[in-house]
Length: 246
Image (cartoon, rainbow, N blue to C red; front, side):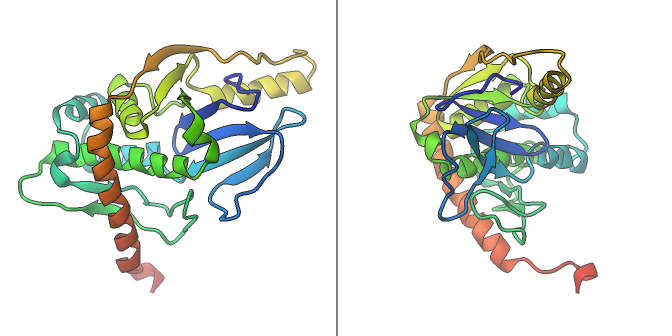
């Protein structure tokens, strides 16, 4: 509601503490494999399909704290470290996983670490890992494949370098929403409408920037994406219970 997403067709990606890909439907057709969610929309006559990533911005904040970095420094390092983070992989399942596996037992961590990798590579690996997690969730949503572009919102996606990485991993043009805090705006608009303060909510999708994917970067990152999925499967299978859970 906060972005004007009001009809069938457009797909919106919101990256905040978690991440969601949302699109409207006329019918509540569920996924037989239960890889994504279906909810009733606040717009009468519509439903929306939602592919969810358990944590996104939370994983980034965790990495900044762990590596004693600031957002400004991290964004600089994101530009310096090479694509693929010199082989370092990060699986961001620090609180389980949602789309497509819906696996609360999934575990995250670093994989493929070697002596030649540096702090910048590990921080970049975290950003790439979150982007890969979003891409994996996106592929579970049928509408994603046919979308030429995605509308991007959310408070955890303001920096051009992070937007470009997301764009290159997803392989889709990103249309950056004018108000990044779209969820809060949508809730306020619905409240105002219920209180009789406004009659109709705007249905115009407004964006302020476009980000185009780099085909070369997309191909290079696709290989790392596959390695990251393998690491996620292997890491969950090998994970041990915490001492306080034994």
